[in-house]
Each structure stands twice: as structure tokens, then as C-alpha cells.
Length: 266
Image (cartoon, rainbow, N blue to C red; front, side):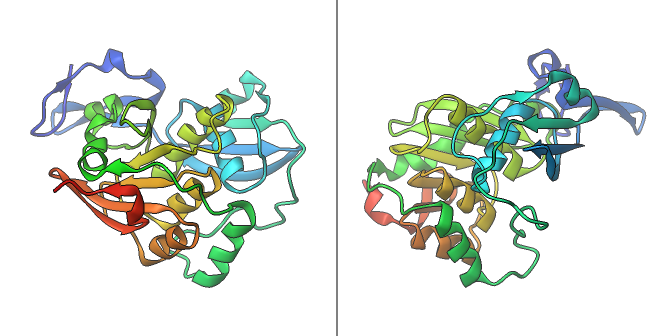
């Protein structure tokens, strides 16, 4: 059993062994989250390299390519031996040529907000009207995400996909919050659930432009986060007709856009 500093004991056998490793420190041993590069290839060319926690790499690749508007449906992913070299190949063709710049800049790059929102709109129509969900249910979603690797290491983010009643459909963990969402969206793509009409995504951290972008392209009407949204995330959610909720904790949540989908029973 491993133990987080000041935390409770965790069963390492319940976690994918690729996701963690044991290290020595201060005369004791810790379980830490694994972080390794993954090269995503499609159509015979390298598309992106992302730093991720190994596990569910096929879903990660599919979710990433879908979020960038490069694929619209599930594809064959492999061959499996490529995973040993941290490289994964997704069958083509792609929807368009990604060019030399393979993916959107993140919130640290200072890209033009208006231009970024217009680019997302190319691949993400405005979301459907429903569902309407109680505020208390939205606030409770972070606590319903299963996070065994986080409990073991304290070093991973998580994304959960829920139906409108709050039932957890799938959760994934990763050192990168965007990777955790890509893994969930890749799973949903394989299951034929995209667009995610009538469903809710919840993330364990802050709400960046990039996460709203991925949710918008997947057609998800409601996105909830434990942390704060950025200004550009709020602008994009409003532009795409999404409900964006932050600071989901202590039985409450802040609703920044799309309040018509939130039933307030306070």
C-alpha cells in the first residue's frame, strides 16, 4: 500500500502499472505518476507529440485528432508494437491538411482570442439546447469521478463523462488535463456517442480555452470544472452556446454561460 503525504493508504494493484512508478525519497518510497512523450501519427505523417501518462493511448490519439477537427469518426489505431516506442498510428485520411502548425496554441501563447474562436467555429457548430440539470447535481460531479491513480500518486488530472442524471459513463486520468479529456472523448468516439448531446463533461482542474474547444467540437452542451475558467474559455463557451460552470465544490458551482440549462433549487 502507498500513502500520499498526509493522506490515506492506496492500493497500487488497482491502478494500471504503466501509470505509476516507485521512487525513493527522504528514506521512504513514493508512487509517482509516469510522464512520457507520445507521438501521434495519422495518414502516414507525424501530427503531434504530447507528454502524457501511458494507458488508453488509442483513445488519446482519437480524441486529440477529433478535437482538432482532423477526424469525424473512430478509426483503426495501431499497430500495438508501436506503443513500446511511444508512437501510435491512426488510419487516414484526415479531414484536412493540418499544415506545419499541428495544433492550437494553449493559453500561454497569447494567440488572438477572436481568431481562435472563429477557428473553433469551423469544426464546432453551436450545441443543442438541452439538457436542464440541477445546480446541486453539477456541483456534485467532481466527487463522482473515480480517480484511483490520483489517490495513489497525487499527480494526475481527471475528466469524467456523465449523462444528464449524473451517472458516470467513463473517467480517465492523465498528467495533462487536456490528455484526460482526449482519452474520454476518444472512448466516446469509439462508442458512437459523439456528438455528446444530452451529456456533461467534468474536469478536475481549471477550465482553459483548450478544454472548452475540445468539448465544443464534441458537441457537449455542459462543461463543469473544479477550478476557475479563463476569460477566453468563457468567451468561447458563450459563442458556441455551451453551459460553462466553474468552482464546483462545497455543494455549489458558479455558472458563467448558458444558465438556461441550470435549474437553481437553492
